[in-house]
Image (cartoon, rainbow, N blue to C red; front, side, top):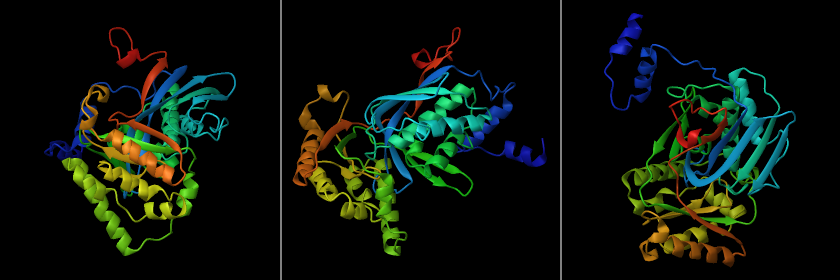
Length: 371
């Protein structure tokens, strides 16, 4: 080894130096597994919904939501896409579908030709409602493509899967929590996308008002100005710092300040979603810790506290989700907005393979769900 490499290997490691620890572990292994593994015939990938921005974290903060779609991709003689569930009729059935974009990117990363494939989607993520259906499709496609191609990517020190997904999406706020789960804060460090997890306080539930109409991200971005003032920038910087601190410290009283912003919610409320701020106020008055526009909308997301274990075995008065749900529905009705109210929670888990042929479980070694 070179003297500079030897110096690196002799350097003291601190608890946060996890990427360097992983580099040394890999370098010390007697045999490193081949990057190119056995190609598979079919794979099913489970991907979560996401809630981006979380108020002021425009294009950089996102949260994985316990609401899942499943994508099955298998080798076939002819290309086809079928779908059932949420948004099945509106979903593109040709190669413009972002699942296909993801699969193509995976085969390009593997440097292998893309075969003809058959896709089937069981969608439980509302389509075009600000809950990350596009990012879920991208990540599902990339993971499925990598498994079918028999190709693995480096993670520590490069986050290669994130790089592919964010390059397609253009920002990490949705794709990072789809991949890793939890609440993620992502930046571009000048060389690559980097993301880190922010802790979610215990007992938090997500109360979502999902309007019956769709919201196009292009329209929601179109109402935003090309520039922001110094005052608006300072406002958002302070709020996103407050948001991360409130989540990290578990100070739920500060969440309502942490989700405030001046860069996108006021503009979208004025031009597209006049019910937004009355619904936010109604949710918070009913006991929500905070409420904000999920992604580009039209869904409004409220966070409530007090959940413990299975909520259906817990006294309702110990929680605020039911009262908040009713308040949000009434606020929507006042503006003639109908929709459904969904109560769930954040998920610490991201996308994962739930079925594959041939399976990874072999001999005496079994993976979860016998994958």
